[in-house]
Image (cartoon, rainbow over all chains, first blue to last red; front, side, top):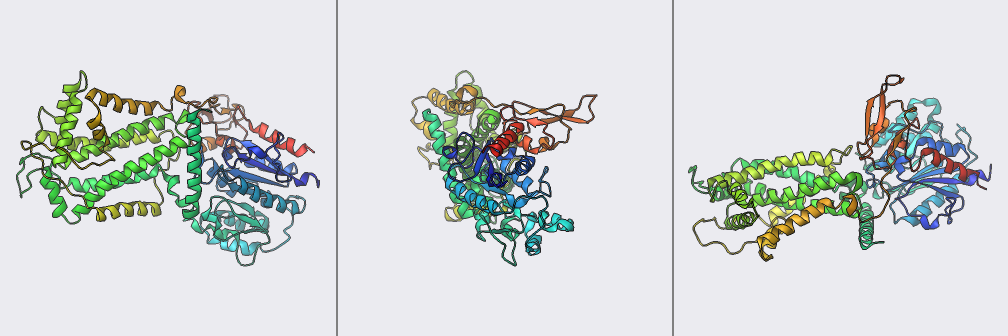
Length: 224
Length: 390
C-alpha cells in the first residue's frame, strides 16, 4: 500500500505544459518522485471515471493538466473538464470520490517550471494524507466555515449547494474549487494567495489546513 | 523542420507568452486575446448602429436631385450631419474609427489563428470564409469612402473605374455596374449606398458560414471589454475629428492626391505603384486566393498524419446526446437508432468535421465513443501499468 500510495498520475493535455524532456518511457516524470503522466490529445478527453479508476487502483492523487482556461486548441476541452470536475457538467465525479486527491492545473506550454512546482507540492500533500478510504470520516471540522462563504461566491456555489442538499455527506461532498478550477475537499484546502485565482489561469492553491472564517470558494470573486 | 513550421512555432510561442502576460494583468476572463474573434464582431454591431443613424440623414446624390433645405448632394448632407445634427460628428467619427478598429481586430484574429495553427484541417471552412469576409469588409469600407463625395471620393472612384475597366473581357461590364451607368451620376451614388449597406448585411450571411461548424462560438466579449473597445474608439473620435475634403466637382481640375487611410485604401496605394492594371489584379486576386488556399491539404506545409475521427461504438451508444452537446465542432449528429435498438437515438460522427480532440470521449458515460488513436481503454491501461510498475 505504502508503495502504491506514493504515485500521482497526471492526465495531461499534450499541448499544455511541455514536460516531454522530463518524461521517461514509462510515463514517469523524472524531477518529481512519484509523479507520472499520461498524455491525451486534450484535457477535454479526461473522463471523470478515469480519475476514479486511477484512485481506485491506488494512486495517491490525480492531476488534470490542461491549457490555460480560455485558450484550448480544440476550443473548449479544458472548460469541459473543468466544469465536469466542478460538477457543473455531466458526467461528473462520484460524490464519494475524495476531492482532496484531485488537482486541476491550467498551464500553457512554456510553463513547465510552474507545473513541476505545483505538482511537486501536490504530490507531497497527497502522500501525507492517510491511506485512501472511501467515505473516510471527516477528521477536521472547518468544512461549514468553508461552505458558508461559498453561498455568496457566484456560480461556483452549485457545488456548495449540492453539498448542503446532502446534509449527511456535507463535509466530504462539498467540492471546493477556486475560481480557476482547483478541485479539492473543503477540509484541507486553502488557496495560497487570495488574488491568485483570476490573475492567473491556473490554480494557485496550496494545500494546508484551512484558516477559519474563509473558504476556498471565496476566491471566485471574478465571476459574474 | 521547415522554415514555415519554425515560423508557426515561434509565432505560437509569442502568443503563449503574450497571453500569459495579459492574463497576469487582466485575468484570463478579461483577456481580449481570448476573445479575438468576438472583437470585430462587436465593432460590426457598432458600425451597424452608427451607420443606421447616418443613413437617416445621408442623401446619395451627386447633384441637386432633391434640392431642399440647402442639402444638395452627398457631400453637403455629410456636412449637415457633421455640423447641424446633434452628435452627428460623433456618430460619424464612431462609424469611421470603428471601421478602422474592425480591420485591426480582424487582422489580430487572423494572425492569432494562423500562428496558433488553428486554421486548417477541420477548420478550413472558417479560414476560407474568414478571408472572404475580410475582403468584403475592405470593399465595404472603401465604398464608405466613396459615399462622402469629397475630392478623395472622386479620385477613388476614378481609380476604381480605371482598375475595373482593365479587367479582361468583363471590364466594361464591371465599369457600368460600378457606376450604374456609363458616367458618374446620381445613380452612381445610390449604387454606392446600396453596395455599402447591402454588402454589410450580407456579412451576416458570411458570418453564419463562419460560425456554422462551431458549437457555442464566442461572439460577444464580456461587457467590460466592450466598454474598453468603445472607449478606445471615442478617444480617437474626440482627439482626431473626422472631416471631409473639398466637395468633388466633376468638371473641375481632377485631384492629384488624397489623404491615405492604410486600413481600407491600401489597395489604391498598390494600384499607384504597379505598372499596369493587369498586374494589380494579378497581385490582388493572387493574394486573396493564396490566403484562401492556405489551409488546403497540399498547402499544409506541415507534415503530420490526418485527423483520426472519433468512432461510435454502436452497441454501447444509448443516444443520450451528451457527446453531441459537448462536441466543439458540431461533428456529432444524432440519428434515429435502428429499429431493433432499445434506444431512440444513435450518435454518428461526421469525420470531416472531427478534430480528434476527444471531448466526446470525456463526455460519454458509457464508453461508447472512442478515438481510434487512443481509446479510453488505452488510457486506463496506461494508468494501470503505471500503478503496477514497481
